[in-house]
Amino acid sequence: MATGQLFSRTTQALFYNYKQLPIQRMLDFDFLCGRETPSVAGIINPGAEGFQKLFFGQEEIAIPVHSTIEAACAAHPTADVFINFASFRSAAASSMAALKQPTIRVVAIIAEGVPESDTKQLITYARSNNKVVIGPATVGGIQAGAFKIGDTAGTIDNIIQCKLYRPGSVGFVSKSGGMSNEMYNTIARVTDGIYEGIAIGGDVFPGSTLSDHVLRFNNIPQVKMMVVLGELGGRDEYSLVEALKQGKVNKPVVAWVSGTCARLFKSEVQFGHAGAKSGGEMESAQAKNQALREAGAVVPTSYEAFEAVIKETFEKLVEEGKITPVKEVKPPQIPEDLNTAIKSGKVRAPTHIISTISDDRGEEPCYAGVPMSSIVEQGYGVGDVISLLWFKRSLPRYCTHFIEICIMLCADHGPCVSGAHNTIVTARAGKDLVSSLVSGLLTIGPRFGGAIDDAARYFKDAYDRGLTPYEFVEGMKKKGIRVPGIGHRIKRGDNRDKRVELLQRFAHTHFPSVKYMEYAVQVETYTLSKANNLVLNVDGAIGSLFLDLLAGSGMFSKQEIDEIVEIGYLNGLFVLARSIGLIGHTFDQKRLKQPLYRHPWEDVLYTK
Image (cartoon, rainbow, N blue to C red; front, side):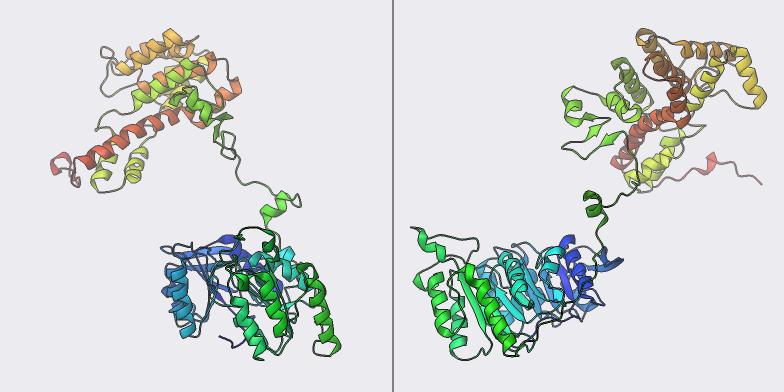
């Protein structure tokens, strides 16, 4: 593996299995380092294509999303690092697919618990094809001031504190990603910082070893000393011992193997990583530290002394003129995300939507402040839910029952009315449920089902002004306006609409007052004297009775009643109710497998 530097300021990566935070942290690091181009060239999300919006400094950018590794590599031939955030179940297969791409040089596998047999195959393939695998079970790696993998080094604050926005003189390699963050901080305190840092991962079989990276560091001119943090378990550190003994490393190596406390336990202890378990004396931290010390590495007496020997080694190299400490530079300010700034109280921002009827932020959704569990446990019906979501209050049971009756009575009126006809024609054209439903709903208006609001509006105005039925009807006639809620194509004075009778009977039994309905009946009496089909229809009945519900319940002010009528609440009842029937007609036509509808010629008057 040896060779030298893995990354540079122009390195670009492909990110497998979209994760917003790690990618944004990479882009923020790019901006912090003054890179001209983002380090993430593309995202691979199996089965998905398009773009993901992220920030590069203050600029919002769109990063391409590809559905396959092959497509991403073809679209971004200069991206030679593959960052794999797949789960342990699929990490091996996707990593092997990436290694087989000629453009990919480095693969970082974040997942922990990748089957060891799969990892061995990846290692074998990578070594035989001169490629590098970092991981599995790794946080990744970083080249200070140039490029970082995913969540390496943590937050921007930590990166700044560790001076990772510009290159130092130290090459660092560790098994542990968490300890890497700690060591970056330690190294920054006592040296001019790291040049490159790698966490090889804590699994039993890492894709690359401690010695692989130390030998690489030895070939990088900017790296003047190496710091190595190993751990008990396995024999990886002994390959470094051999390299030191054979004189392959000619730069100072400061090393420590953690896990010396294992001897305090009477039985064998499994530490955090899969590989952190001693399999004998040679795999103990004490044995490894001793071997490294004897091979020429600078090994402290304890982890607590690690920082001191790093400092001592660095200062010695400075005195010898082998290191010229890096001049400190001030990194640019990373723009803070709006959500973070709002939470911290640094900024305030206006909201874009106001909602007063429901809230889904807690443990369960609430309708007008009533938790969903209460709605179910207290046996609320559809009418109760409508009262909460439409009127923002719990109406008396007779009111919600009336709402439910209106919905049941208006759910359907056969296949011949315009809304049902449109839905049937659309369904027979092979369209989906939503298209069929909407085609029927769009016919609702002043001539079909949309007269409830107008009926309520005109009846209310006439009653409140004290107009007699004669004055009201004749006044409407002079204006050229038909009285909404009066008239039916089929029903007559001697053949009343059964639905109207049911509504009136319910209201007489349950409503405290039916003054608006009684006024509508008086209007009907006058209109029937003119024509036998000018009966009170279901629109007029619902419109007038809803006025009685609002006024008689004592729960609405006059202003609220006027607003409800003006906004169009009552037509909402017809829209909601008729949707049930239109959906039924759609299902009926599809169940019957009806063919495309064509209107018969004989039913058309062709004229010039």
